[in-house]
Image 1: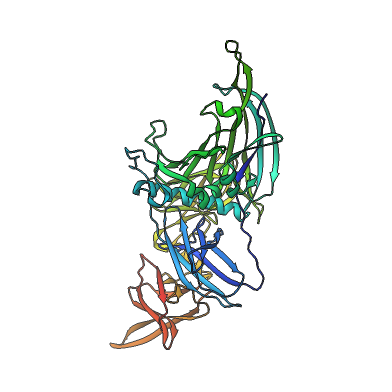
Image 2: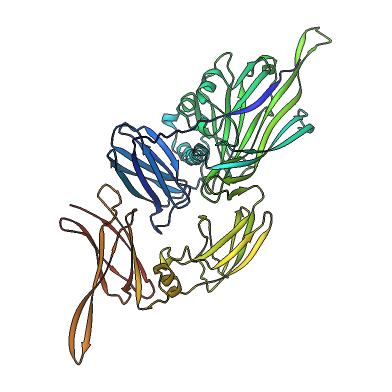
Length: 558
């Protein structure tokens, strides 16, 4: 008689935010160098006790919002992203009807895992005392898993799925039978959920009237405190078959009778630290399945980052034993034999942004290649509004892959303009799945970019632009405060020198940002001041024709 496995269930949970009589914390996450919004960053709301109350993934424009129900309190924000240093902003205490706005700047910090090898001891390191190398690998895995979990918890995407049910031949894994279905899932994740707490206490394979149900870990399960408290981590030894990857093993700290546990390996890129896939298997299978040991029983979950900064599960499968009891012709007793492997799984054909209906991911993506006329090696080509970019090579060429089908604007980005040209579309590209679009970008002049940024029909080349932000000492952005740029112009008329003070004024936006156009680029000192009286801040800036855009960060101090 066969043990009949049933549908795959993955551990997951959802976050519900109440919105009645609540405090609001708004913000934006930006790159500390370019001040460009950072897509794919995770922001956590932390209370005074250090507990994560909420976690969100920022929108494509780097913005986020927390709505905090209940009595007023003091909170901290923690922002993190793979490849960037984690930053916190504390002391946030919105009142019952207040909205606090915060700007968080993240610094680049590559986490390449090249050179990391497993220790010779092969020990299973506990979470609280992992070695330095294991900690570095776990940090990369944790951030990637958090991105997967946050993308699902937010209900960011809907999915076109292809699911399959197969019977495989043991050993060769040859397909005996195969059935497939296409579905549209409006759920938060492309896979159904099950509470991780019940899996830890009740086991990852559970019997019922229909046979056995097999469960597998998802991102939420691997990050959960119950899982980390009952499983330990260690580095997998170098694998010649996967030279570009580093493996992080997890396994139970101790086995428990009559309960099936889980073990596996998270595989990450050595170069980028990004999560590639998870292999997993079972310990202590119940019933007659426990009499057979096979590394073909278990499964795989594959992860992929999408252009808007989110992460999704792209493919998954789980393989379950089909067992039969046969009478041994010599001893006359019964013995268990593996007669087949049942596999259930699926793949994401497309992921759609639920807010807009646009394609965020397609299994078979397209690419854009081309050249920048007038571009310089080291410049960038950015996909406008998406967050993807590529470096221009010595010949002026570039290539951007992994784009879902659709139409995109491309911008030529120069370091000297501090991101003002990121929204200046220099070419359009129509991407078809599985195909490559070729484009030529005419690099706009500096004057064209500055005129567009300041919304004027033409640009005076003797002037430039100041970009900046104003915050208080707690890191909170300051809205609606006056900012003044002042400089002195000296004239020589008929051998008589005269000095004239000039100024431009503006107000900060909701995010504490400001832009002042028309300041001189002749190496003249420009004094920039925000606020008045006892609460103000000042900074001096010098612009040049080669660097006509300057950046100012002002912190108000009483």
